[in-house]
Image (cartoon, rainbow, N blue to C red; front, side):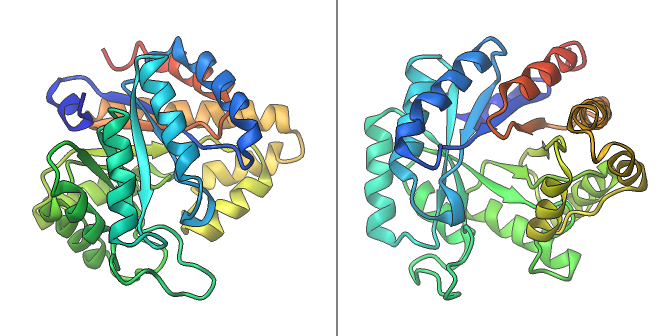
Length: 287
């Protein structure tokens, strides 16, 4: 099933993200995670392409196939373009078709340390267009509630969203954020720019101080005062921080669903207990 079609219903689409283990020998661990997540029956599960936007493709496809064949859940295969030329992308898409995987999240990916990307696809919109040349695929793209970390102007952020939609993107999944008002402002700006495709809110519970520092540096996400106070109060107690963080994430998700967002996407960090606790709460909220 194409993920773009899921948004034709009147319910909020609920989805999860997992990532391949760093070592191929660790694939069994992700299968154990998926087995625990199966009972949640998410609308789809996305599988990241690998750290730094490179490598991991074989593992990504293997996991996507397992999600579809063993668990009957629709997978969303991430694909980056910074280290893939036209030939590489064509080969990957062909392998995906053989595996009956028909949903792709098209991303630019992190630039290599040299700062040089493969010239065939300079931007995610170029990759979107290349994938959509084959109508077998439903294509998603990323969006940024607080703007991409390399962008300083909001209008540029909205224009890039529109260009991705014009290139063929069927839906968008947002980068993580901790302030729902940032997401609502993005929705308003995207609407004014002419974006019409569904936009899914990406949520990640905080599990440690180190994680917060990493996310702020990598994504440029801001922290509301309420969340800062929670981290200050429970930062040295991982168990209590996790409880408080889940409460905060639940509040975010409940508010998003009450506002009628198209979807909520949970970044699980391959921690099934996070998804289990969160989805138990959300099931009553989206109906």
